[in-house]
Image (cartoon, rainbow, N blue to C red; front, side, top):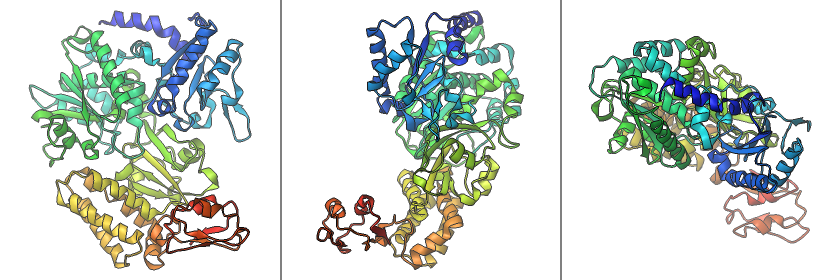
Length: 621
């Protein structure tokens, strides 16, 4: 593969890209291009069947020359899947089923759209264009750039048409390794995997070490509950990761790279392997890349989904075939990494920024974000929010903007209570911090962290003690058990939290809990243990009254902790018997048209009666 061949591919497929991206119809001989989301979220909602049905209808109506159908990567608004985009209108259909396909094609053949499938605002007004939908309006795509324009069936050529691999060509033919490092350092790109370490500095540390063998590693072992940013990027645009890893290999002097991918991501693995095979067959990977003396090969290594393998030393041990346990640093991977050789480890999102920085310049990237946090960040917005999905925003965007302007606010008229930033390693930010700008410094000051990008919103019905307990249960399950502070300390923390939620704790337990959290934080071997107490410490900091209420009053105000919850039927009861009919243990008795009663000794606190009563006659105490 040389530059001229790359340009020929770009010229051949650019017209189709411009048709989708710019609405330019001059270079194509068809009228419409339908892109069906092929991400895991939409695939689970049968988007593949929607694509097949659309193709079937088009064929039956003999419209193959007018309407094209392609699979495409994740659009982000996962709660509305399956999602379908129609070009050149840039119209977005939500919750499309196979039953809608006939109508979609019939209307499109007449130049019309199906209004009921389009997005509608709070006033019922139709919003046709995707980029005018509130969820999309404030987003800025860098890591997820161009995903909605590339056909999954022809992704390599579409990627090339969108300037793909031009950064790699530029690097290996016109730049020295130190030049690449300088650009990345000037850009201000920091690691998106959690710690936020400067990427250029990490590459430089490895570059200057003399060694006969070095390695490039992509950490795609995304383990945070509710997080799916890296999976989506790989499923939608695997070549961006391949190109960045090759650029890193050239920069540090490595000829081999590994993508450490969790085995629970089969679709990502399938698409990444195909992308590697296609790039190798075309000569973009392999020997003498773009006529240079640079060689680079890439391989996928599957992990079993252990959260601790997100830690770089544990990850490398897993690749080597050993137990995924961390080791003390120094030595750092830049000096002694995979198989004892100098290695660079970056996560998926970090790498997804690299080629665009090379193409557009450090100043372009540096101009986005805040003073210490440059560029954009991808978040998996989940929990008690109307529009859950993937969000990519400039650093410095406030939490309020994410939750209300993009996320659409809290459903069912409930009140926002807190947001967990950074997954199990992060912390809770209460309503008082909702106007905090999202950057590394601001989040750390509040006791949270950027992390890999998990963003879990909770409302007034969430018990913050139980919420912290959930993350400690996860940490205890995922701890490798190598060091005593993490192995034993986190179990003791969980035991105290369990006593509190069971109504068996004393106020002195709070002091012990806090002391133990700081001990585990300061003495654990790796980042898993060092950050595991953060959910507890942050909830103690902002919601201590709930902890005290559990202990002193034996009350859970959210009604979540079953041992403290009692369901009572009030005088509003009209005797309809709906509650007794759903009770799984027969704890509710009474006569029709008379007030029913709950036997508290038999009640299992499942809450089915509370959810079923249409008259507000059952209350939680």
